[in-house]
Image 1 (cartoon, helix red, strand yellow):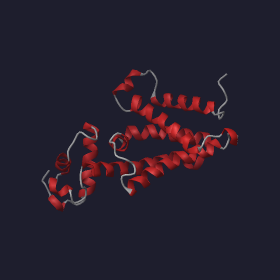
Image 2 (cartoon, helix red, strand yellow):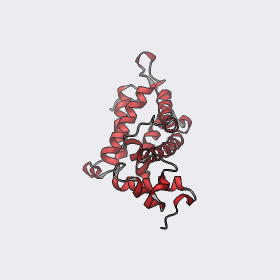
Image 3 (cartoon, helix red, strand yellow):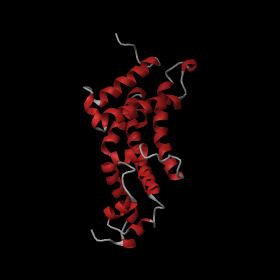
Image 4 (cartoon, helix red, strand yellow):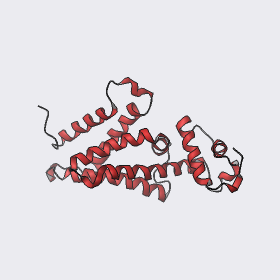
Length: 205
């Protein structure tokens, strides 16, 4: 591809897409800005028109990832339909689906060391995604007597952590071959145990 300097039609997005490919191949710390520029077909100097450094480029990858992630979570939640319990389970499955379909974004979001509060735009995008799960947890926890009801944010954080652990260990990378269970089954059973502990599901017979 011919280097185009500042004349690239959509330089910023071209660099993001190049970075996402490199992140998938090498991880978020396994490439340089020069390599991203080469993949995008522009000169290294042109990168600085939009990004101060590699971390700023990765942060934009993460911001776009959180935007897609939030959209998927909102679609899965579907306003709490057909029931609070079904909608809650759907958000967990959406987490797994996102990690598999958008690995570059996922790594930029969760494995790069970039804080979600690095920029206001990134913070807003990550907050929107978190808010979907918190809303789902809040609606479901209303079925628990108030005296025993955990804060919705804590409830959501527990399930987010469980989903993230299943993704990291079994859904996205080579260690996934070590379990005889599908990641979806692991997540569903784990959430089921958690919900039974809260009294939201009847105990197994």
